Structure formats: structure tokens, C-alpha cells
Image (cartoon, rainbow, N blue to C red; front, side):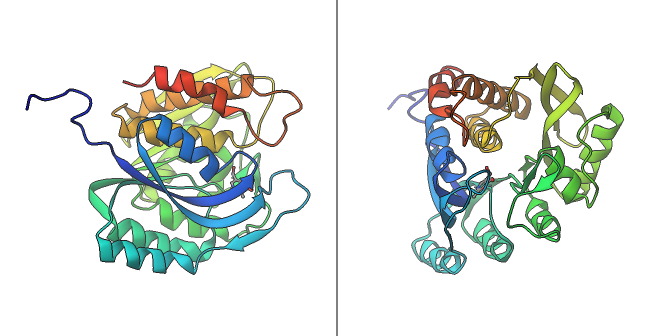
Length: 282
Ligand code: PXL
């Protein structure tokens, strides 16, 4: 049978490990639609189930699913279920070892690891994480093919005070070098800005840093890091370079924010940016 250019390439299967916040447009409820929109199969291992996320709602329920992880891994190993990629997001400390075990033992040959150290923003850890959590998260970053910290997460991973403004390229180079020294192959640092009008990412493969900037939008929104990471992982699995995947992810974040009504405070309307995402994939 002659080769069929698109259908013959078998679709990749990614496993995302992060919480299911039932309401709130973050984590798994963002990864599933966006990774799928990239044409990549998205399996989900929930790290916890919350009624809603912790970023602005007054309260929430939280069911920790750590105990389920080794049971699920044992079942996958019995059936020889493997993944072409892993994408981790919001997880808690006791889950680091079970996750490392799954990434080691349920990997297809050449499987990629994407680690979004989702634990902090705007200079502060998210509610519920203690001050020693960043050093535990650093263990997931070791051996990752791509890590996607924002400036706050990067500083905390390095045991430093977050610096969010008034820095230059030398600061970014030093931060990125520190993150590579943790054992990450590629670093995608988000929230980088050298000029008040523009916000972007620094993408490093360990030998050079490339930048991508978009106009800074006048509002911040919850869940944009999760949108960025999901699109980035999906786009890399579709063959985009790290810089192109990062630029696409940033464009989808901007389009999502622009599509979000002013009164919609707890997330972004990323659903409206799916046509743009699909149109930009090869
Ligand atoms: O978007 C990051 C995130 C993911 N999951 C939960 C959160 C947050 C940020 O607050 O609370 C449960």
C-alpha cells in the first residue's frame, strides 16, 4: 500500500499527570482538549480531584489520589501500556516518586518528559504548598526533556528570591543556566520581559537562548500557564521546534485571554482559541 502522508504516521500518546479541578479551566480539563486539538492522544492520570482550583475561589474540596498511582502503574505494566510522552503539572510532594516510577517504567522508546513545575506565580507559592516543596519539584525537573517554569517557579526551584522586574538578559542567562544544572535538557522560561510593552519566553537548549515576545495584554488571567504547557507539549509532539511551539503556545494564550469576558475571573476561554491552534499545526 502506498504511503499516506498524514494517516500513516501513528498518532502519539501523551500521559498528563495533574489534578482534575472539576470547575476552573485549569490542569487536566485544559490539557485534555488542547493536547487532543493538537492531534495527540491524551491519557490522564489525575493527581487529585478538587471541586475547583485554589486560585481565587474561597474554598475547595481536595481528594488526594497518590495511593492510586502505584495501582494504576501496576495495571499498565501488566498490560504493557506505554506512552510516547509525559506531561506533569500540579502535583504534590508524595507523588514525585510514584510519578518518576511511571515515567521510567511506562515509557515507549524515546518518550519525552515535559515538566511544568506548576506551584507558584507572581512571587508566591500557590496556597497549600510549603516552602520546601520547590526542592522536591526540582527532582521532577532532573531528567526532563522540557521544563516550563514561570519566573517565580524558576527562582524557587533555584532556592532564590523571585525577581519579577528590572532584570536584563544576563539575569535570564544565569537563571536558565541554573535550571539546566538541575538536569533539564531544554528550558522554556515564561513571563520574561525586558520592556513594559512586551512579554515573552526564553527558550534554551543548553547552548543558546532564543526569545519570543508578544504585546503585553492589559490583564492577567488564571490558568494561562496550563494552556501554554498543554499547547507546547502537543505542538512539540507534532514536530514543531521548541521555539515555534513556544510561539504558538503564547499566541494561543493571548487569543484565549482576548476571548475571555471581563467578568470571567477564574480562567480563560481557551475553547475559543482552538480553531487558531488547529490552523497553525502542520
Ligand atoms: O493553574 C495551576 C493550578 C492547577 N491546579 C490547581 C490550582 C492551580 C493554581 O492555583 O489551584 C488545583
